Length: 305
Image (cartoon, rainbow, N blue to C red):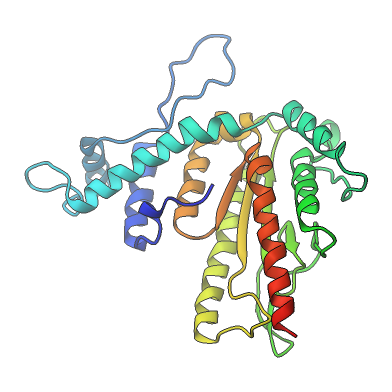
């Protein structure tokens, strides 16, 4: 999923309003509890103008920039409401059906692995005990990338920080290791992060931290882009590192973590990730992305002479 152009490139002040209103009004509609029913999940909420005004006033903030004296939405207010409607529709109608459970991910992994004679090593998740299982979603991602970059190099598990160089000197180095880099973590064309949590039963701090880790990477890459505009890269270096986030686990993200899905959609439109792939979306979208990486690799190789 790529950002909707209608909500890309908006000001930080716009996103301040979105975040402030969201946290006060709430991200979701809470369903009525039913005895003996597990995993109830209400839809993503679209706040009304009255709720927006009440939320801001409860925080001792003005709503005049969004709601006029006649009670109707200002142009900015219309934009804010339109985004809330878009975010809810996107998550409720498109994203939720894309998210898989462990059995579905395992089946898709087996289907893809049968088509390849050689495959990247099958990773395990980072959990322990009974919850330590094959990382099927990561395996799916690795298979799809390998199938679409040919024999080009790729680091499916970088054990070093991502670094961009100038004259063989470090120019920028990210604060944390990412989950994958093409062709590698030094001067990459693309980096990606994978958040799969099939075996968790709650949306704990570790899962939440994963979202904020992606935000940190995105903010560092945003600063890198600004630095590259001031000091353009050599012709054989990427001018922009593509940043992809891929997530899966229906119960964790949809039943327990819908508010964080909202934050991810916000993060996408704020420009901190270039694309977010949800669950089985990797099967349809990742091949084209990987092929574009391979094409850029060949272009840069030709530029270097």
